[in-house]
Length: 176
Image (tube, rainbow, N blue to C red):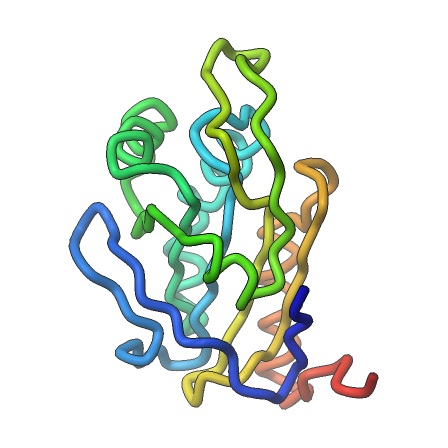
């Protein structure tokens, strides 16, 4: 599995969204692009987590951060997530490939049938990851998990990014 390093270029990322094609190379944020990989429609924790992000999307925009959420879900499942989770402020990507998951260092899991909310897990899906990328497409901050639990709170990420921007705080974790 690949491990992305801060201050190094991130892999190319091109994905279909519910609003059309999206490419990381085409982004021009004031400060950062934040790509939030979520597990998919079947995940009740994702529903709450991505719902929280949807409410804070303008706060990220206020500090110059563009946001994309994405998963291995199909277009239909991504559209259902947008509707069921009442998302109105986020760009939602879908159809992330196994190769893209590997390129970004994401863990993957095999589906286990129906979830506690009665939605079938796909045969395979990615586990959560957050990548904050500078406009030059180098990694600033990453958090990758093997489980759906204990994810960083988006308000804390906003606070950390505000501090980093105010203090010109460098990306950390660049040494092996």
